[in-house]
Amino acid sequence: MLKFVNLGGKLRVSRCCLGTMTWGEQNTEEESHKQLDYALRKGVNFIDTAEMYPVPTKAETTGRTEEYIGRWLAKGGQSLRSKIVLASKAIFLLLVSKVSALVYFLLAGFRILREALDCCESDRSSW
Image (cartoon, rainbow, N blue to C red):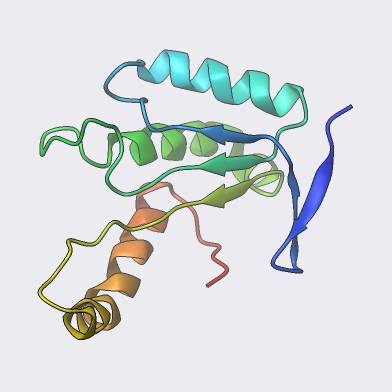
């Protein structure tokens, strides 16, 4: 039986998290949708992605993983979206100093994460 844990005190997630970093490079959209369907059937409700996926990172494929997830979510509607916890992250370039990195995050970080949510066709976030 799949176990669940509380994440950040608010979210109940499966201990098993479905990683998506190869979708769009090593896996097709059809394969990714099949993996998502299978994971959901087995009780996995925690899906991990990032704005820079798939890996290896290339300009022509960046964001493709989130697009695949977004189209899968769109097929299932709000009832599907309410069943999963979608974790994303933004990868920031290492800048000259920690102060520069903080300033960059404050200026661009929320915009990048909002764009990731939009790409996944999701309107929910937990900052």
